[in-house]
Image 1 (cartoon, rainbow, N blue to C red):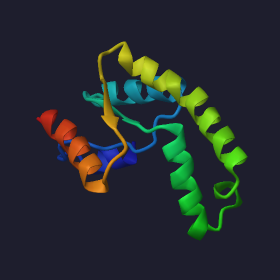
Image 2 (cartoon, rainbow, N blue to C red):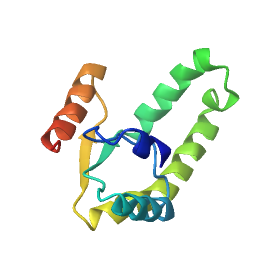
Image 3 (cartoon, rainbow, N blue to C red):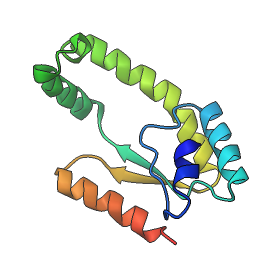
Image 4 (tube, rainbow, N blue to C red):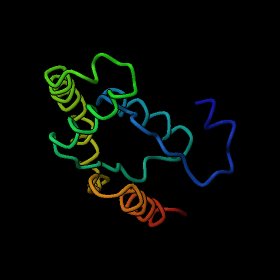
Length: 123
């Protein structure tokens, strides 16, 4: 809330990786409603599990994180992430706020697709 209050004249905020649960989404919506604003769009990056595994293994080459080098741990993390966060997408689907973005390709292609969706919703 403090970032919202400290920046009253910005045209919007980007929440990256939040909310992660339906309860957090509902609480965020209530907070934003009190501030006479709301979520404009929920951008969902679509990436195959194989690509996610590949990316995390690659990150494991330099991250120093033990959970980035074990394929079984990575797959378990992906399963847990999907189980917890799918309810958030379901929640925003009921308000027609979910836009799926292809999360594979070049960084520039993905960034451009995200920017396009954000720009389309700016006031």
